Length: 193
Length: 190
Image (cartoon, rainbow over the protein chains, first blue to last red):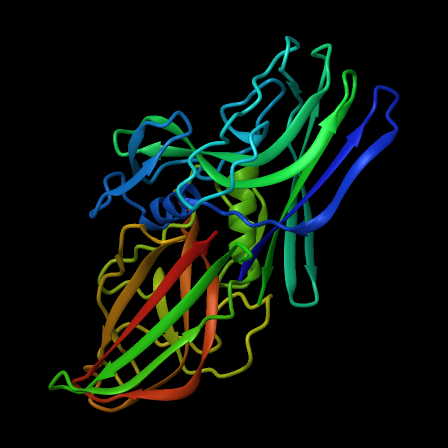
C-alpha cells in the first residue's frame, strides 16, 4: 500500500514557529493521480482505450505516456506543478482536479511567493520505504492569508504530446499565515509491504 | 476513509477447456521499494537509485517512459510476471524469487500481452486494472506461487524493476493446455 502523509508548519516574520500540523495521514489521492499512473504504466503515446482526465485548468484531456511523468519539482515562482496551497475548505472528492481556490504566485493581496520544491529520500526502515516532498511558501502580501487546502500538481503528457498538469492529491488544513510569515508543507509518500 | 493507493489482485486458472479450476481474490500487500523510487524519480526528475531485477542499482530515467508495464506478447520481463517462490514478501525484494520464463519448454509459460484498462470512478473510488493471461504449452503442469509486476525504469540500456510482488495464499497449478489470468486493480478512495 502507498500511503500519503501531510505536515504543515507556519512561521512568523522572525522565523518563529507559530502553528503546526504534525504529520498525519492525508485523505486524498484524487483521480488525476490514478490517471497519471495509468498513463505511465501504459507505455503508449496513444493508449487504447483512452485515458481521460481533467487538467488543473478544468479542461478535458486524453493522456498518453511521455517523459517526466509525475514531475513536481517546481522551481521558485512556478505554480503549474508542485505543492500548492489554497483558501477553500470544500470537502475533497475523488473527482477534484485542482484546488478549489488556489493561491496565485506574487506579493499582491491574497498572493503568496512559492519557493522551489525539495525532495528527501528517507529510504527503507523496517518494511517501509518513504520519501518527502517539501515546499516553503512565503506571504508578503501585506495581510494574513488563511490557508485551508493543500495539494500536489504533477506533470503529464497528452496523447498529442502536449504538456498538461494534473492534481495528484488535495487535502484540507487550517493554517493562518501572517504577513511576512511562511508556511512549509511536507508530503510523505510511504510504501508499506 | 483514509486515502492510500491500494492494490487488489485476482488469479484465475483454467484448464484446456476453459473451465475455472482455481481462483483467488485478495488485497495485495506489496508495492515494493522500487515502486516508490520510480515515483520519486518521476516527481523529482532525478536519477533516483533503484535496484533493478538483475540486482544492479541504476538511476531511474525520468525521460525513459518511466513505469511502463505494458509488456507485449512473449515478453516476460515487463508487466505481470509469475514465479514459483513462496518466500514472504519483503519491501526490498527486487525480483520474483523464481520467475517462470517465457516458452513452451518444461516449466515455462507463454505470456500474452498485458492489458491495461482505463481509469473509472465509482462513488468515491477511482481505479484501473492491469491484466495478463499466460498459457501453458509446456507439456506438464506448472505450479505458480508468486505474482508480481515488472516496470521499465530506463530505456537505454533497458532496465526493469519489480514494483509489486505477492505470494499467493495457496499455490495454483496451471495444467498443460490451460492458462492463468492475473488481474491487479490499482485504486484510490477519498
